[in-house]
Image (cartoon, rainbow, N blue to C red):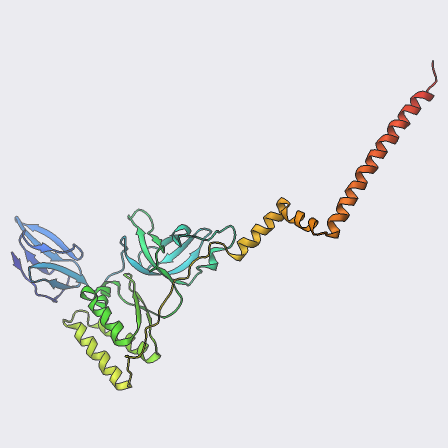
Length: 323
């Protein structure tokens, strides 16, 4: 087994990475297997950063590229169109995603009772999960779960999707450090969208600068320690103490089982079925009593008119002369 690269080395397309069939490759993204003269060679196909473990496992972290959805990814999407029972969502990918009404909540609203724009409208940001995607149709999203919600607070930042792993860090070390040092709530989507909620404006500005530093120095080793020193230096300059600050929290708004419009619709339905009419009549309403007396008078007059016509016919028959 021959490895031609070192840990955190930057490579470009065409660079040989390793040779030999016993090389352990973690993930196939950015690495292609080539067989030449019976020899196996692994070559880089994208600009990226080499990740080499102590036991010889090799992988490549791309430094450029668009977002390609995968099932189970948590993404931050933007509503771009609203249908009768679906939302169209921009996920920063080659195509849009679809959020069906049944995937919005465990108790979805009724589109026949009220428009679904009352819940999500064009321009709204959502935290959702890629439920299904198989390259033959647009990705299907889901917001069912306590962690998925409409993001109506915070500052939106967009970075290159391939640099999201550097923002999260190994086993979440980078994102945990950012939250602790700035007392902020940070929501990271796999598609490169990040929403930050900082307790003060100064901390928000410092956090944005730290994220820009991560994106710029994604290929540098020891990045977590470098960013931590940067944050501590900035806080010391501004005299900010984050020990007494609490991170803002986002809570998911639950969909009510029956809205006010649904309740009013039910009452209208009762009136159509006659329940409301009986209630008004039993209460002694004048309009209902007039309607009843008027209908009774019409029935009695029709009966009397029928009797007179029958009598008139019989008298006429009696006066007819005999031949």
